[in-house]
Length: 229
Ligand SMILES: Cc1cc2nc3c(=O)[nH]c(=O)nc-3n(C[C@H](O)[C@H](O)[C@H](O)COP(=O)(O)O)c2cc1C
Image (cartoon, rainbow, N blue to C red; front, top):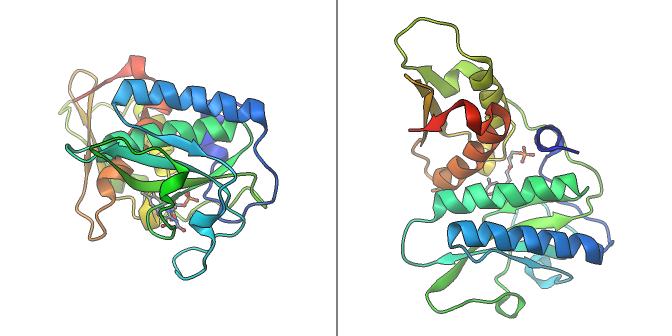
């Protein structure tokens, strides 16, 4: 499965079956995460066979069952790593999708099990991404607004929007965002430049979402077709 297929097939999955992730897949994911960390300065980690983070049903936002594997999103305390976490986390999400695994970003409804991952001085756990073999593949999220709501064309030429831009936008709209809020705006500028911005959101997740949707956009639009403004 390639990444474009993974974008189409990925949906948040909150119920998992009792099937451990095979050792070869664990090794491949860890290697992939190492590269993400080298690129970004983050300290993302795969935690396997650890049921305690999701063992209570105290919270009502989303219903998780059977979660034993997750990505611990560990980042430096100093500095703004929100977009980087979204971008690198979604890279891992789509990579896992190509391995036949399901995922769900989880901002709220988990317990911080401190023995389960490594925290170096000056780092903190932001939140996690649940992963593993899902009971099913999840369902497509609803699209509340038309695609035109999410972009603007500032080229000033009046030419039709390029295909690569529309492919990128469609992929951005398939991305996970916190409570499906989709608080972002892409702007097409002159000379193949694209700006992407997070809009204000009350829950404070839109800068994580921004990194996620920018990765989807890049995969579908093709990095060779544009540069980020
Ligand atoms: C940053 C972030 C935090 C999220 N936190 C939670 C959460 O705490 N609980 C939950 O059930 N889903 C959570 N989600 C999943 C979203 O609800 C989900 O991505 C959105 O409804 C779109 O659905 P989809 O992922 O199936 O496309 C989160 C998603 C993101 C991107």
